[in-house]
Image (tube, rainbow over all chains, first blue to last red; front, side, top):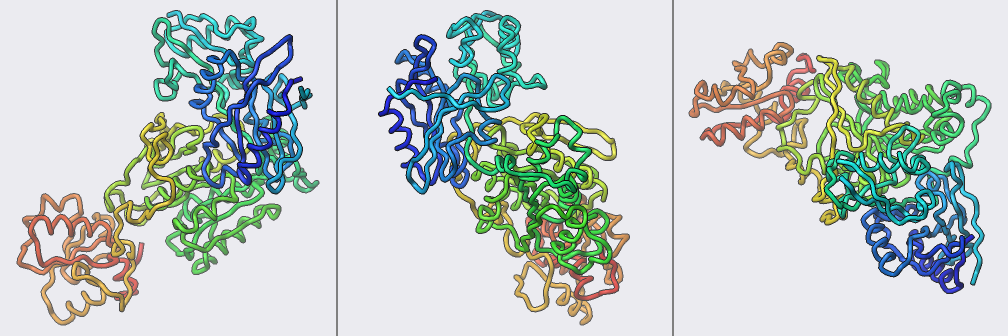
Length: 141
Length: 488
């Protein structure tokens, strides 16, 4: 379960719409509070892939991640996952997402953007043996 | 050395919710081993089944990626900070079409030897079927690699070539047969590949790969396999792959030696990290000039096909960051570690190349060297002479000294001895320059005009003025003046 404010969900959708037809991506900053992840802020990341590939791939380089980690730490927050958009593609993880996912526990928020308009938004968590994603409940606060 | 390892948020549950852990080790590898020895639950998250760091896991010592240092052997100083940093990739697309792919009963029967291997199995075979691979060149490398990819069940194979099958191809380009001489290579390749496996889709592109069409051709494919034999195309394939974020499965061959690697800028070095600049034109002979053992492209091409299949099914250690060198005479493989060049002009952080350029110009190839085959009426500059022009002048009785700069074994196949040609192999020209008289009119030639252009440059520098290069070499002579002359 991840607790997210309405405003942050809207910001993810907006980022997806602004980046359309390309994918957007960013990191989720938050805290574990009483066993539940709480999203506190977003850190949008410029998609470092070029041209065509940006359409359906995103990449947050380790350098950017390192920087983001410092930013988070200085604000007393942790990186608790990432978000990205699927332009004209359903809001569920792809095979590529699974192959390249980081660690179980991390939240993985995906917003589908259809013809420039953000529609579904879902969150996922990879299972321990990395074999699939389970959907994660988003509790709007 | 004691050092501190920072733990990603997701993994802190395995280290008592600590943000960082004190470890000991002389190198980054030892420090990580110390960490997973003490917190064994971490191992499966950081390492894959083969005991290698997972591909998205990066280790930083202080602010430096260990890939730019000595990898796991990077030394650790007291109180260094080690960070475990994921890189994040993902997205809709392509490869996940594998989830929607089904195998027919006939396909299951055909691929049964794959399906019973746990590393491939049904999942891997579906990935192969969903995969799209583009091969550049239907020549020595392209022939075996596309045949094996077709047999393996790669669902869509694209092939770029504009050449016609010549009998001199058959010594190594096993996709074409004797009956195909004179046919477009794409036609015979299509017949052969679809005969091997009618379940695949074949797309032939009868065009010369160029800066104008490369991005368009590549964009629909998951990866590109370079089977070409010239530097402009190698740089072009590399740059287009880097710009599109696709792997470039590289191979090259010469005489008894071959090389292979996977250039994938997202995860390792690219071709420009290895060779920032092309060699001067003419320095590295092509196979047409230097020859190649016919079997060699079979070995290197099949290594390329193997790497492509591994990338598709996501198993094993790809040749990313490694250059494999093969010597057929010694029958030995060697391996060089390749590092990403932080100053790489196309994949480095301060890249200066953001679109495709003119690769002929970049490789110093001027149009007169590119058109190696002569043709009758074409214009030529005074530094060149066409075979017809030379023949006419010889027939008139003009006194012309013909210098053949090829090697003795090439001379044995065909030569211009009856016109008084003299053999001075290119490498010996500087030592034997005294045998030439700068007052004489001299024409230098080789097989196709490349090596003799170097001899021409050398002799010009040495003060020879009345010198010309035979355009297209002895091959053009055989084509246009003396059809009875053997060609090789």
